[in-house]
Image (cartoon, rainbow, N blue to C red; front, side, top):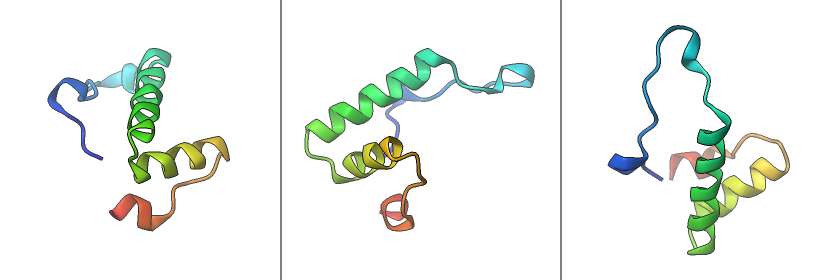
Length: 62
């Protein structure tokens, strides 16, 4: 799943390297929308997030 131009994360330097809560929420909303549209990688990512485990290598590589 690639970022579109308007979804690119901001490049940060120094102390502001961590993502904000708003950015995390926006990313999860995009995942939910993609999963609702039938994207299997988004579904796998949501399951992995819910189970608090890393994604399988096959899901990342595809």
